[in-house]
Amino acid sequence: MTQDQIKQLEKELWDAADSLRANSKLTAAEYKDPVLGLVLLRFAQNKYEEARPAVEANIPDGPRGKRAATKEDFLAAGAIMLPNEAKYEYLANLPEGADIAEAINNAMKTIETEYPDLQGNLPKNYQEFESDLLRDLIRVFNKDAVKKATGDVFGRIYEYFLMKFSMQGAGAQEGGEFFTPPSLVKLIVNFIQPDHGIIHDPACGSGGMFVQTGYFVKDHTSKGVNEAITCYGTEQKTNNTRLAKINLAIHGIEGKIIEANSFYSDPHYLFEKCDFVMANPPFNVNKVDKNRDFVKEDPRLPFGLPKSDNANYMWMQYFYSYLNATGRAGFVMASSATDAGHSEKLIRKQLIESGAVDCIVSISNNFFYTRSLPCHLWFYDKGKKPENKNKILMIDARNVFRKVSTTINDFSDDQLEGLTAIMQMYRGEKPEVAGNNEWFNERFPESQYTDIEGLCKIVTVEEVAENDYSLTPGRFVGVTLSLDEDFDYKTRLIEIQEELDVLNAEALVLSKTISENLKELI
Image (tube, rainbow, N blue to C red; front, side, top):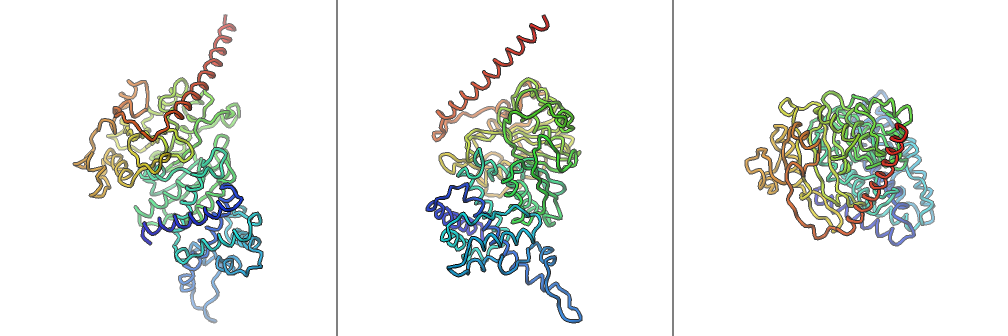
């Protein structure tokens, strides 16, 4: 299938499934996991049918002819050997009076039995759905175009459904926290080039970083994904852990996903072992218990424990500490972190002086589906080339976006390719851009890196020190002011006021503490 055909199929399937939900009593959150489970069932049969000819052809002749194919034969081919009652077509052809919910629940149990990585993670609550709704949903994923879809197409469909559910705020307390927008994931993957070794995401959500890494490996190496990389994920929330395990299974990626809290554990024991670290951690987390022995003795905090009640600079040290001597990291971070003061500034100073900070990218508002705040992408590289050891690439991409709607932005393919090319040129690599990329050609007609006011600049660690160790790109590249007519400035000003109120309250508490401490000294 062509890319356009895949996009059309994604849209048709979503429109059909979402229309069914709209006419039911279910919320998006109630609907999400069962629908994603049906996508997995459909994929499992497609993968089984796709693998069967090769599996049967590879069975050697014996004295009594060929033996029957086994579960192990299919697992070796990246497929699940499905008994008849777990096949999607069996469910689609059940007679009208059959208990469709019970049949789907049993199919899920069978898949879990045959696929240990999914044990206990598939939805088995289909009895909560009306029979007519279930039958209609089964038909949605039983169209001829879907029957012929390969594994990669199903991966795209699964990711598309995750994105659409995220846009509806389904399945997370804050809404959409399980899903990082594709534009940001692709930019992170393109910048750090994770084509080998150990890949870690200590806040992995639905596993999107691993999925995009899989695509990168396929596009840039001759190796199979599971031959080239080993994926390790940590996720605190049970439902997100399930989503990640299903996501990896659908994409044929072998990985170890553990449900755990990264603040209080390092479940994979990956300190200084990772070739690549990628993450979109929760921003501005408060109330981490810093009195726990594990936290106080954590080797992943080499630059000290931040004194503020904010975990951003804990995450930033985790990512640094997981990397081996040549490792790279890319992660999403709250915009406030580039200029944070006090103990966080001291930690940032040490990070900068370590030479590992490689690039900072400012991202505009509205890239996330459930919040409008801007953010920054941070990149570490412990294996910088000698000529870049003392340098940091600053990119201000706040004016680089494509409007998807009045509330959602993303990067166009040309913009994504062009931003990636800036990083490649900074590293001394040949930029991988199509000849018709107007965004890139207008700015870099010679295909050579040059500082561009308002967009990018290579700065030295000394320049950063002179700017009070700020890592805000706009401070270095210069700012081109523009008015976004569709941006909700009123709401943003209210948000800023709320943030200011919190800071003022913290300042009062701090002032009181200082005053009391001074009294004790006197």
